[in-house]
Length: 180
Ligand SMILES: Cc1cc2nc3c(=O)[nH]c(=O)nc-3n(C[C@H](O)[C@H](O)[C@H](O)COP(=O)(O)OP(=O)(O)OC[C@H]3O[C@@H](n4cnc5c(N)ncnc54)[C@H](O)[C@@H]3O)c2cc1C
Image (cartoon, rainbow, N blue to C red; front, top):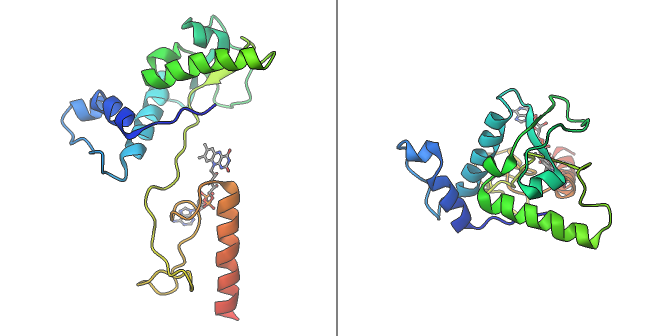
């Protein structure tokens, strides 16, 4: 299930974050790193809610949608472990509300989906690089830095496992030509 985050949503939430209410300048709507600040804020809130040792805050699915703290959690493969937490107090409200309603609606379409045996773990968040290291479209080399071949997600040329692999393949083929 995906909750899309618009610039206005991110700005509204960041304005309330202690980092920015305590004086640091807020990134504006044109800041290319705006969504990364938003992601950082969500991750920091979850880290703190789990007690600061990578224990993830979590809630059973039906409890999550009902806004009720889970008395206990089932076993989970996440190694540092889970801590039962009222996630409505951790996640930004628009994300919590969308997921809470979304789980219920999807449960009506798929039998067995909406169940208290499922656990909502906060949070696996990710975003692709919002900036791109330049490279020549023919040589794939950086226009100023000789022998630098920006590649993959961090350089801004991929958004997931497959596109990162394909970009790596392109660079490897180019390097094979250059080094032959
Ligand atoms: C939580 C999470 C969930 C994800 N889920 C999915 C998913 O379901 N589907 C999907 O398609 N994609 C998913 N992705 C994205 C996917 O993992 C990445 O897009 C992909 O791995 C990027 O590949 P990459 O080779 O460009 O970068 P990376 O896999 O990040 O590789 C970069 C490598 O460079 C190394 N490195 C960094 N700095 C240095 C240095 N100075 N010296 C030497 N080595 C260095 C790092 O250790 C790392 O091994 C997810 C990502 C995250 C974080």
